[in-house]
Length: 238
Image 1 (cartoon, helix red, strand yellow):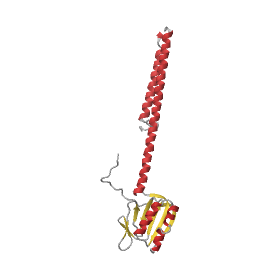
Image 2: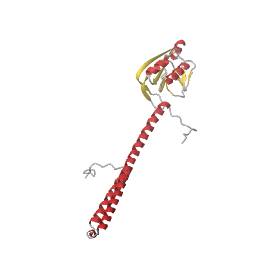
Image 3: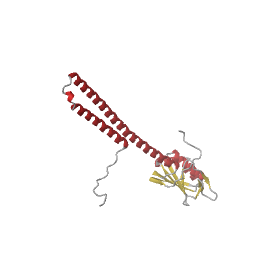
């Protein structure tokens, strides 16, 4: 016969804190019932004096008050334990959210959101750098630079750009051929305006014989990621 037959659904085991509270409540209730039955069954009560009966009743009322106070204290402890768990859960969720945000800033996780797809033609490293800086000032949060040769680089705070011998640029040690596509997640209108201010990125590229065109998108996907750097010396301050 299959040992699994005839068995009902398994009950979930209560949390240790909840189990302790309910056990204590049960013991307190049992103690009260036993005390009441003991007093009810006492043959001496029938012939006890009025003063003795008053004293016994007073003791029972005092004991009842103490038990009620202990029950209330246990209920408060249960609420505190519950709120403590909720607080820890909220803290864990906040830590995960902050971790994701830091991962986006460090370039270790992909990102997506509204933004711009910018094409830069016949420009040098200085124009790419100016574009990145202008976009950051206008609210650009996550960026990726793609070269015509299929090389992609995640742009972060430490990124650098230099002109490469024979054409193209070197971004963070990777050589990219033009034209370049700069994907950036941020407020499209604000960033587009920032690039087109008089004497700004678009004007500078045009005067140098290049061009900068922008395509506003409701969803820009930044897929290039970087490996997290292993710190050798720095430690957080406790």
